[in-house]
Image 1: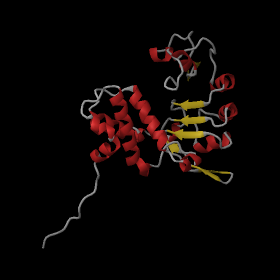
Image 2: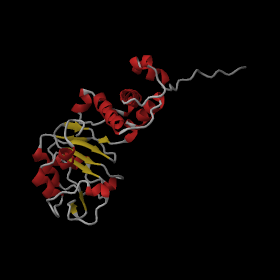
Image 3: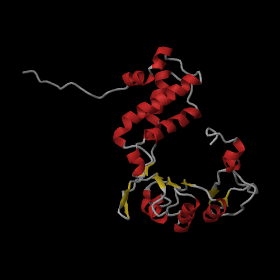
Length: 241
């Protein structure tokens, strides 16, 4: 959010973090440093449904490993807050998912943007097929490592991760977006990794962190990265008689 122009205080105030005891608030004495950073002055003891109804969030992230935590009323409330609520039950395995893809699409009347930590089959609803996406770091990490290695970056920064995510999102086609997908097709992973690597290198170059590349290589970074990618194509083996 800071990358999009929000100040620190406004960005932090947009997050409502809850655990098994409810919304994280400043009166709590059991919070660690990371939790205390998001603790709020108000909302003591609020559960998820009350948080959704009161503060009208548009994104719901599940990182609890508590299967079925996202109930129908919660998701319907989320859907009433905006046109396309983002519902991400990210826990796995499937038995620990906060809700299923079918539940999310049904309870949001097919309006939600859905991704999950566990795999789910396509969902048929009112003559339309929705394709749930499994949220997996394989779409980012190969390209991130490739880019950082090729340019000899002194370190991997938060902005490199951000630019990697932007490159990944930009790879999605209009067709994939229409199908409700959040990530590209796995068959395109090689091209995705290429674009992510280029984004990482550009960020490293702008930040003055590169140690292995020249200005000329930077000017043709896409071709340069392509030339450095391993291509598993082999000549046929011929037996000698």
